[in-house]
Length: 225
Image (cartoon, rainbow, N blue to C red; front, side, top):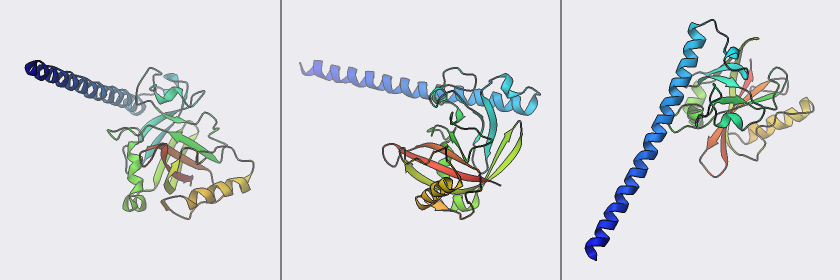
């Protein structure tokens, strides 16, 4: 009987190891697949006259965050769900895409919100976490967005960890006064900040999941220069 239980325990351990190994293999394969897709897109952007909109008509613009590896196309879907798990080619991809809030009109809104996953291998919006380090926040502040309408330069003015229900990602404001109240709320609850923004500015908010507590979000805010 003792030998039977020892064999059973060994068998269970082997099964557990096999399942864990499969999960690790699957995750690494997904990372590799995403890397290949976005490497190909970057090469298309740099070396081809092909407009990325011809590949995906949801393409909005390209975002680059200086000091990080954030260098991605940004899409906008009909909701905020589809691109959570679909890549630029609209096929299933666990790391998803970087995407603009479906409610946004980028050219007109006070606050344009851009979402991306916090990937464990530090891709997508994983490196937004760097801005929670005071020294990094002080020394890195530039974001560039390139669209068909031109290039827009942004300066980061705040970073913080917010509850998902905090409304840090509001996009609709009735007037500058309401937007000013929103900015004051953001600034009051940010970890680090620069006093360089007011209600006449247009801003972007980069949002990703955070793990300080359940439903935490890290958000980086930048104003258009």
